[in-house]
Amino acid sequence: MKNRLRGLGVLGVLVGIILSRMLGIYYGDNARIAIMALGIVLLIIIVGILIIKKQTIAGVVFFSMTIPIIIIALGMCENNLYLVLGGLILFCIVLVIVIKYLNSIKK
Image: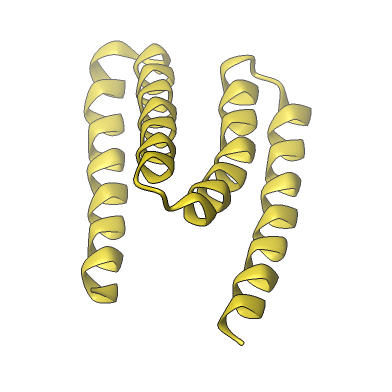
């Protein structure tokens, strides 16, 4: 199961990069912003599905990782470097907290 999820993640990244390149050539930077918005909508749908299926801990962890990504996307849309850097710093902080939390659950 773990290998399938890892492969699915890698496949998602590759498809996203290819789609962004192809649409970016035809439509410019606006296509990349639209693809980023579509990705954020998909992340929110995934969090909703996790919560509906009674996997609240996974939903909360996934949602906490989604918030910095949304901040980074907003910074990229507004061409605001401070917002992008703030989102990256927040992502690193949340990542450390989630790793510590998941390690404490496994013990």
